[in-house]
Figure 1: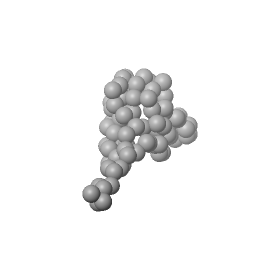
Figure 2 (figure 1 turned 180 degrees about the vertical axis):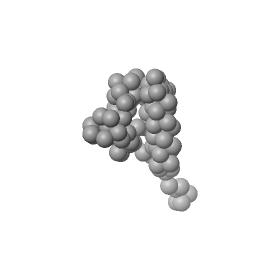
Figure 3 (figure 1 turned 180 degrees about the horizontal axis):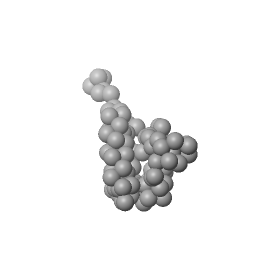
Figure 4 (figure 1 turned 90 degrees about the vertical axis):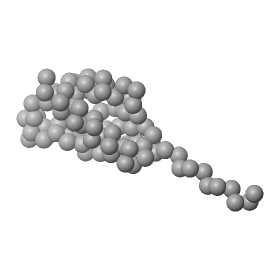
Length: 92
């Protein structure tokens, strides 16, 4: 059950990074998951789907890369950025 707390912290970190980078949508999240971490990928996927409902991360795909050690971290994520504000028309 500790995956819920870990996934909540992961989700919060992802959302902060996405907002900082003016994301409109999060498409893919690449995670490194150590075999000795005691964290189950299926549980992370389940809790992430619950936490992300109704957010820019709702349809994000989680990708797990195995590692021998006990690491668990975000490698990278792919986002769609918000459209910049249109330039003001100065010809009026």
